[in-house]
Image 1: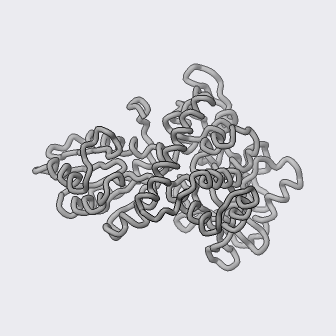
Image 2: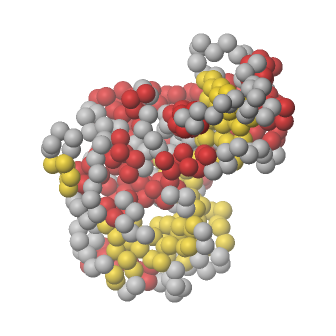
Image 3: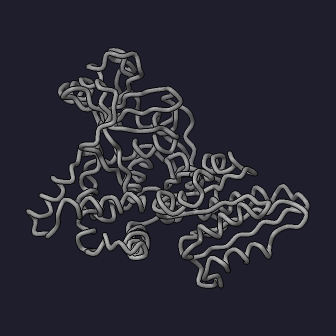
Length: 425
């Protein structure tokens, strides 16, 4: 991303600086090209702008070909030679997993230097095994996603007034919210191509590079480095990606995925499929939403849902089909809830399914998502699961098309515009 595109993503900046100047290492995680490196630069710029004498700020990208560092000892000594003698040193390391043993070097810096450390990582294995082993609770994770809709509008230099369905672009052209939102649902929110001028050809070319980087560098190569050889069949991996992309929001079982693949000619097993899906989750390409049993008040281990991290990747893989907006909307609602810091599950109450149970700071919201509720049968289908819940927690239906009563039997009907621009809460 060029410096001209270094737009302030304030929510993530606030989260990253929440534990500034503490012993905790700040680890920014997320899928490739979602903006982690730019966030490092934003943190760097924020601290640098304070212009406090004696401070040293040191940043290195370990994936750059110009980077001279090859070993953990070289990594440690590189920063030791930059340590301030009169103040605190701020250390920024982009994608450290390229260096074998980097964890040992980072932990030694934390112990030996008066420093504040910020890292990025494109694979959850960085935290689940490597980092936690050496730091045992001495880090905090800043989970980063591609652009939320509000950020996408900032990148496109658009602003919709409260209650307004249209705005004027920088070129003086009228822009409807629905048009921008449909574009967002199709092209997703990768920061480098977040403009209204991006063509489908440009988007496809860019997403091919993103997809290849995730599949080869964060899954195939990562697994080889772990010496576990879990991911050995790239064609099978791609078929699983395609299956999950087609079925975002559907309840899944590893058995059903494996059976579907076998029936279409693939040679695989339940164990193999489970390993591949786990690798896709670890690379942040898909996010798993486990089901929550509202009656038993317990997380269920069966039939989770998988959501893709960016709808632009799905469009690229599926050939930009302009259908199925209900499924796209559900995926986008899930990502928006994650962006705002909610813990999100699918909901189950006896034989009824609720799209989402969102929990944050003691607040619980039950959410249904639908593209429209024009017919009475559709309206009843979406309302019935929420009407069956007898507790007093909030219940809402997020709908993209049409206007409806604001409240039906205590259930709030929220337009997509209000939901994504925070007017609902």
